[in-house]
Length: 414
Image: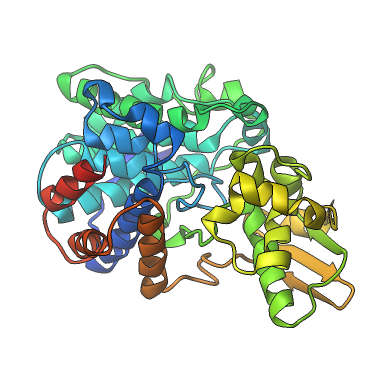
């Protein structure tokens, strides 16, 4: 049987069974820590309060609701999705105490989720939440490797997950918690798909490219499957600021202009089309609106400097109204053409102008391990975790070898 005879999920399943190098596994610890810190930071959110008591839910399932609340979870640019909040709660919730095995499952979950997400086209992203669509696949792959299942069972798990996947962007037009539900749903769906596949329940092999599959239903021109020699977790960006990733290039450019003493008066943000579609919000009414507002993000830098999580809260939204009115946003055709391989922005004010092709935290402008740890400590402090417990979680994640050590601390948080 040739590669052409294999379905896309069969080719992905074969690809996932490669060995994982220690350096990749070590890098994955930083992504696990980043997600755990995002969960910690959201402990006092409304979503967390509604999940309190858990209604019988395990800690990993509760955590699945929280990893994206602050909009600081890791992101893959070309797939335009956040892998951590779908993959890591799945990995931790599947049992087994060897952390290396859990990390390997996480790497494979990232690979499946990003590989499938990168095939989705602009038509899909216009209506469908890529993190939700591809998240069920990523969770299913991660769960299968925690169960030590066969390649055929992995194919079925991906087929089952894909047959009920997806999440619509309508949530962005209403003050709701559907985005958090998308992540929890991806985890639960992927986990159930894996468990049922191991029981012998079969799923469609051609769930992606079949005549009534995902691509036919939601895409105009799906992109080809790309299977490289490395692991896509190395392509995943960390988010230093508590805003939508589409706002980060503008924040970074504003910070550089401010450092030059050139961020004064009226400011023009020139960026790619999707940044405007998702983040052109001159008058945000809520915390989530502020996190999806280019105008608010730049106003923070103008008036306060380096963005803090408190700068997206209601008091700051009210205080920065005048500064937001000084910010104009427009599209650049050149930056739109460069996207999503590059998330760029140009900022200009009366005293200066700067263009950035990539955002801080991207592979081209990476956060160091120390930077990831610093971010983790800040998020844990925001969520009310004391310094000693934060240090314990950092050590357990970056240096430990047992899942149970991480879960004990996580259960205490939730």
